[in-house]
Length: 116
Image (cartoon, rainbow, N blue to C red; front, side):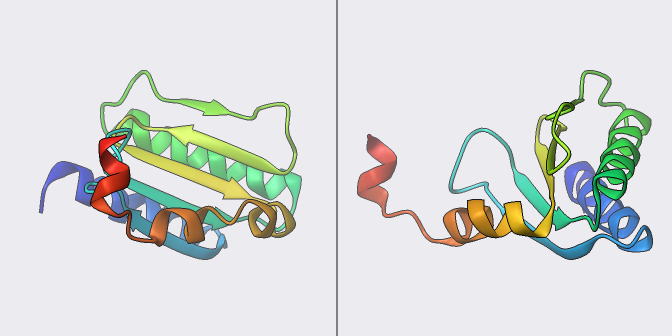
């Protein structure tokens, strides 16, 4: 396995151990140039979401991704942890349902739309 896949698996394991809910991974390689993978998970409270995001940030830093950061630090309902080739979204379940990121990014994008 390559380094980014190993990191993705490590983050999924960390989220699972720390009781994140509904963890999914989406392969973005053929859909976007912004990242190779996106992980989406839910936390049960604002404190849980904050804790999960800090643990993910530590995983990124431990793996050598020093310039990763947490977006949404003012929000109690979502966090985005940017690990360059791997993006992690952690939502409160209601916010997650509202944004439906997994539905948006899981769908195949027709090649005609990729040219735009």
